[in-house]
Structure formats: C-alpha cells, structure tokens
Image 1 (cartoon, rainbow, N blue to C red):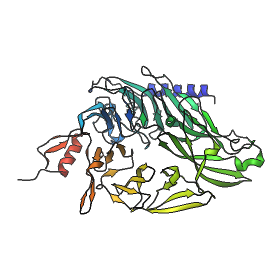
Image 2: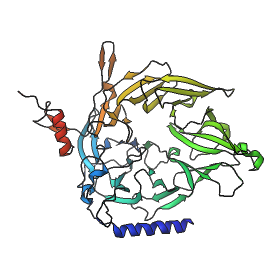
Image 3: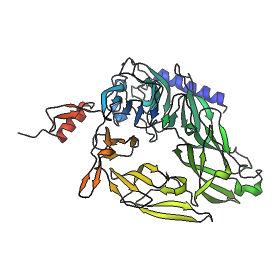
Image 4: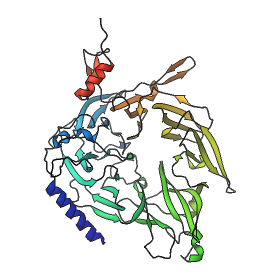
Length: 495
C-alpha cells in the first residue's frame, strides 16, 4: 500500500469513527496564574516538568474505568485526580499558588510517557470522551492535546487507538508509533496540522528518546527517534537497516554495507541485524545502545551489545566510534558512563558488564536486597551514585566504592506507571496508598551515626485545613471518595 493510500484509509476510518462517536465539551478555562514561555524547561517528558519558576505536574494516577460517561473526562469537569497542576516555586523551593491548569485526565499506558512543555504550551495525552453507537466511552482511544500554560486555550492534535502507543512530543511535532508505522503530526505556535503523515512504514523496532531540558528555539540531537526496517521480501541482503529522525527526513545510520561489505552473500557475517536497547543523554550528546547478530548458512551468531555516542546537529554512524559493552545480547541496561561499563539490574543479583581491550567480557556482581527499579544514575569522574526503588522504598548506593545500600524512605513509592522523577533535589512520584503525586526533598534526609531521618512524602498539590484529621489538615486537590479514605486513615484523636 502506498503512503498516499494508507493516509487516505486512515482518514476514512477517522471519519467513520467521528460519525459514530458523539460528545462535545467547552475548553474555556483560566487564566491560571502568569506564565514564562521563554524560560528554560527542565525534565520534559515526565511526571513533573519545570519551566522557569513554575512547576507543572500530573495530580496522580486515575483509572479509565472511572470514565463511565463522556462528562467524566470533559475539560473542566474531569476528576481532579489525574488532572495537570500548576504551582509557583518559591525561593525556598516550596510550591505555592497551586491550581488545576488542565482539568482533564492525563493517561497513557506507555510507561515512557509524560507531559511536555514547549514555549506557551503543555502537551499531554488523555482518554477520548467519544462514544460508540451504544453510548460506551471508547477509552481505548487516546487523544493528544496541547493547552496553554495558563489554561486559556486548548487544541486537539490527533486521536490514536491504543493505550500503550509509544510517543514523543518535540517543539514542532508529535511522533508516535503504531501498527509498524511511525507517524508525525506537525504544529507551530499558532496551529496544528490537519492530518498525520507517515515517516516510515514496515518498521520493526523503535527507540524513543528526548531531551529533558529545552531552551526555546533550540533543537537537540537528543530528540532523535531511532528505528529499524527489514529488507524487502526476496532481497538477497541480510540483516536490517537503522534510521534516525527528529520528524524531518529520516537519516540512514547503518545497513548491509556499513561494515565494508558490498552486500554479497559471502560477507553475511558483516551484515547485521540491529536490536535497539536503550538511549542515555549526556551533556554533549546521546549514547545509543544496541545488540547485533548475523545469520550465516542458517545459523545466527550474536556479536554482542554495543554503544555509540552521537553529538553535533544530527546522528552520524561512525564504526570507529562503536564500543562493545558486552559479548552477550543484552535486552535492558542502565547507563553508568561508557568508561564504567553497563549495569544490568534485573534481579537481586545483578551485574556490571565490561569488555577489555582483548575482547574478554567481565561481569562484576552487584548484590541488591531485592530487584531494583533504577530511577537515576549520577555519573561523575570518580563516582556513580545510583538512586533506585526496592519494595517501594527509595534506595541509594555508590557503585564504584561498593559502599552498600542506603535506605532513604519508607515504603510508599509506586513504580509500575510513570517513573519517579527528579526536579533538582526533589523527587516526584506516585504513592502506593492513594495514587496521587507525592514529593520528597533529598536535603531532608539525615544519615548519621545514631541519627537517621527517613524521607516522608507529602502531597505535591498541597493541603487545606480539616477538623477531621489528627494533624488538622487534608489534601486539598483530592476526590471526595479519596478524602474519606484519608480521614479514615488519619482520624482525629478522641479527646
């Protein structure tokens, strides 16, 4: 099918859906505070994003099962749980002036998702409010939106079937991957493209990445998406092709000729199948990890897991800069600086892989108290500090001196949806009791001989007075049902 025909088919399907679905809503809202669209953005694509002196964050994890009728997720009528909040960051780091800026449920099943901010717009994903011909809300369709950072204007970008669709927002386009096809919907500050366009079809693997920091008007090599394509059926070539795109024309990175072969059958050991594994941003570029294998005479041989660092304006694949990090084909890993190897933390007994100059693989054992969920690795010349969660507790350890685990918090961190994320010294996360966004300040942690003070999370969106709880407060931006639960869990002491 040609790209033109495929787009026409997509449009036809959308028109049919539009005819069947029903529902309308008003997007009138705000203004919510003041804005600073020229300020730098920190932590894009996560649970909590900072722009200048403002913080935007998702007020917890709500369930699409709570959308029984369209009005349950109408703009301005949706539950406060899952809405996007806006706070001003005071000089002492506390959050003030908190209000709902996007009164609509944020939701995606893609754990690499989150909210993005570019200029004057917040970009996010939400379940549709459209229904089928029996009145059932079609929450398996997600709508991609943007709302002004003061809440005063909202525009729909597109609608896509599937809760787990991988996506990334850039400053000029939404890129998403579904049904073996990579799509793009472009936009400017003023308008959104009417239709999605196809970047690539017959895609076999995609690795999304994005810059966490954004300076207005400046593009970054960290915003490239990487993907693979097989050769056409009947081709005599072996392996696959690797491309990169930031929404513009795809850049060919590697194919059957990359390693000096002319594509002849005799050189199949140099015609590799690439499997994309991970990407990690560094201050001057991005490190992409991938495994390679070749098939010769019907037998598949693993070449190992490799890394290459891209810098400059766009990725260029230079085989002389390729680094082997493991002789095995790794499927997941944590970047700890190429000079330190790679960490594979998939069980209590985990490993740091390195390959020496003679090509010999070494595996250094790292023992955790249980399987860790890594949040961040702080890499410097002399240390690798790892922050991770075990049994819902925040943990910390220095890998290079193997000083062991340090428990930093109680058991309250939920890790199976959007990942906990740092904004400066503050960690934002979904708590596992109420499923709202909590925050802890690492500077409050005390770890001294005979004096340990664990971190205790607080509702990021703040509190209000209550005569029903033991400390006289209750979370302010909370559903009535959840408030009842909170009161029952924190009752006022009888006099």
